Structures are given as structure tokens and as C-alpha cells.
Length: 354
Length: 248
Image 1 (tube, each protein chain N blue to C red):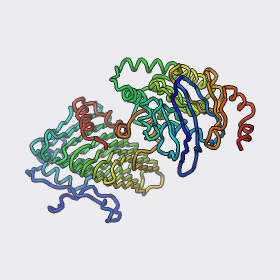
Image 2 (image 1 turned 45 degrees about the horizontal axis):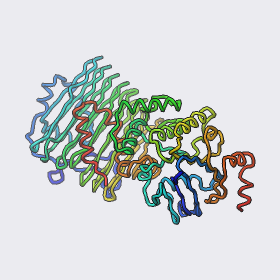
Image 3 (image 1 turned 135 degrees about the vertical axis):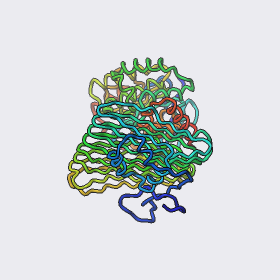
């Protein structure tokens, strides 16, 4: 770690030109009491073998972020869903006030043929500068289904990092649904390892950038298992002088025959001063695979704008409608009424389109 | 009858290409007008210019609606005054259901809050009239709709928004016989003595149930002939060659 620049995070799996500035990012550290994470493990009842599986899972933000969050963990959560069980975990709601600093570590183990749904939300309750570093690791064993829904509405002075590492075994499926809408620095990294036969990973992420806020996203789907399927989508809107980076990598490792990976990004840009950098990457060390990437970046298509305006909506109403429409696939998954209403009023408050 | 729309000597460009060349047209309240003409004559451009599509630049002339000069108004302002265009190729908008979209548009037009259940009931009845499966109301606007369903969705929007002037741009193109009949029924349902229609079509079938007041032949960006409904028959029998020949 470098105390001057913070944690080195969100590394692009293959380096590109340095001057573009997207090979990696820096996320600040904060002063927090150090803890021995092993002591947390002991209480978890996961046992040494399972602990080792979790320890070996790589994450999207990388080793420095993992070490920092674990060494300063304030909220360890261990979720284990036994074979064949179906569970909806009580929502994990983190509220931030009085400059709160939270490093939460959540480990989810879904045993054979189990199903679990986990919901995490991070919301500011005042205007003070808070710090959040989250680490979530998921192991989905054979035939398991895991759904993780995350919402983040931190205020403009708060820092937020959300690091994920996921391992998906035979015929298991992990679905990640994220609404990353707030924070001065909104940094997300996700690495999904599709190691089992027919393992499946789906990610649907929305983001919102305005003023001088920074959003830095790093998604990697690494296919090692045969007939594995990944589909990563990111959608967002950029206003003001915001700065956003999206790295999306599908990594086909030799031997992952008949694997299929899709990634797409839709970015609506509403300001000449907003900065957008998108790097879709498909790494291919296996011939028998299908990889697709698509990126739509820019303003609202003029034909669509005219069509919607011809129904009586003003230009700004069309913009708001189109942004909300692009968020719908994620928003519709937020079933917790309290959080959904906070998300709606957050967007209503922020989205003043001029 | 009083004047609803007046297009006065309009010249318009698209991508710096002159499409309309001094076009004049007047539609009174309650009238139904039909525009015919060969491909590339400027028919769809005329609709777009009346609706206020910014991709077309009016370089000369004016458009008046209920006596007011609307040439500089944007499309949304024109829509709120009561102008509607049924698009030849309607846009798909993922994430917005047909019902939600229509509710927002109706509320926007009237400025009045809507009662959700009453609106849903009204929508269901209109969809029944158009032989539309009610499940389309909860589907994203035009996404995955067949060509025919898209056209029905346009007519549904017209019926919900109740404009003073509805312009139908080849609403019948790509429709089978049954669908044309259904759409035609929808248009007849809309039409009353206070509102007006401007229909662009190549197909006489869609006009069968309507009382046509005037038929215009558009060629080279101008209206070169105006007559009664008998002109439709003449075009269907002889094509445009005779009429255009006289012009050339």
C-alpha cells in the first residue's frame, strides 16, 4: 500500500496505454482500528477448509483492497445456506451518519442445490463525510442459486468501495443486481470465476454520475469451466463534471469449451464536461467460445427524442424518462419498500436536468 | 368551419437537401385530408415539419395552428396544442411500459391527475377495440411488437391523447387485410366533427370507412393537385403519371 496515493485497485487484467489512465485506480485508505480477521472466522463456524476457499477467491478491486477491508473489518457477516435450503436473508441495511467509517465483510456460502437472496444497502443519513469499504465473497456450490442485490446512496462527501469476489461451481448461478447511485467516489470491483460446468453469472449494474463525483467500475468474468455463461450489463447517466471509468473483461481460459460471455454498456451523457472512459475487453485463450461486447455511449438518439417529444413530453422530461427507463431492470428488483422509496426520492432530487 | 391548420409557402431542408418547395395546405376543423404522391415526393417530410421535427429546417414559410404561428415551436409544444403524428416506424423504448407511457403523456397533456383504475379500464376498452392483447399494456413501449402491433399502438396512443389534428403516416403499410380493417375502425372511432385527419397512404382500403373531404397530390415538395375523394380512384386506376406529366 502507498500511504500517499491510497490503495491500488480495479486493475485492468491486461495493461493498455498508460496515458489513458485506466490501467488501475487509487482509492483512499482511512484511519480505523486494526483487527485480526481470523478471529472473526473462528466465530463463523465455516471451518478451515471453507475459510481457505474464501481466502483464495480473487476480487475485482484486488489484493490491496481485500487486505485493507479485512484488516479493518467492522462488520463481519457469514451466511451459510445448507444443502437444498431456500433462504431470503434479512436485509443488511447500513446507514451512515456523523462521519461513520464502516468496513463490512460478507461471506456467502450457498451449498449444493440451495437458494439464497441477499440484500445490502448503504445510505447516508446526514451530510457528513463517511467512509465505506465493503467486501463480499460468494461461493455457489453445485446447483446453488445466489442473488445479491445492492443499493448505494451515500452523500456527495462520502467515499464508497464495493469489492466482490465470486466462485461459481457446476450448474450454479449467481446474479448480481446493483444500484450504485451515490458517493463522492463510487468504486466497484467484481471478479466472477465460473469454474464449474454450466456455471452462470449475471450482473446488472446501474450508476449515476453528476457534479464532480467519480465512478470507477471493474468487472471481470473469468471462464474456466465448460459451457459456462456470463452476461454483464452496465447502464448509467452522466451529468455535470463527473468522471466515470468502466472496465468490463470476459476472460476465456484455455479449456472452457462452449463458454459464452456477453457484456454491454449503455451510457447516456448529458454534459460536455462529463468524462467517460469505457474499455470492453475479451481475452481469449480458448477457441471454442463465443464472446460479445456492445457499448452505446452518447446522447439520446434524435429519432427517439422526436418520437417522445411528439407525445407532449419536453426535452427534459424525455431525458428523465429515458434515464429512468434504462434503470428499470435494476430498480424493479429492489423490493424492499423503504429502500425503493429512498432510491426514487434520491433520483428525483438529483436528476434536475437542464 | 374554422381553420385548424395552415401551411403557408413552406420550404424545408433535410441534410441541406431541399424537400419541400413552397408547399401550401389548409385544413379546417372536422375535415379529413389525404395526401398521395410518388415515393420521395416529400409526404413524410410534410408531416415531420408540421410536427416540428428538428431534423428538418424550415427556410421559408410558416405553419399556423388555430391561427397561431407555430413554426418556431418544438414538437412537445405542438403536441400539447393538439397535433399528433402516427409514425411510420415508431421508436422502441425499453424500460417504459405502454401503459405507464400513455398515463404520463395523458397527464402531461391535460395537466390533470389521473385515476389509475379508471385509466386502466379506458385503456383496456380501447385495446379491445383494436384487437390488441391487453398484455401489451404492460410490455415495454413498442419493444418486440410486430409491425402490425406497432401501428395499432400508434392508433391507441392517438385515441388516448385525443388530438385536434392527427396525422397518419402510412399507418396501413405492412398490415394485412384484417389489421387494416381494425386500424381503420380505430381511426373512424377517433374521428368526430371537431377533430381533423391528415392521412398519407398508398392504400385506399384504410380510407373506406372515412368521409374524405380533400385529396392532394404531392410532387417535388409541392401540392400539384387538389380534388375530392374521386381523385383516389383516379390514382388507383391510372397512377400518378398523368397528373405528374401535366406538372412536368
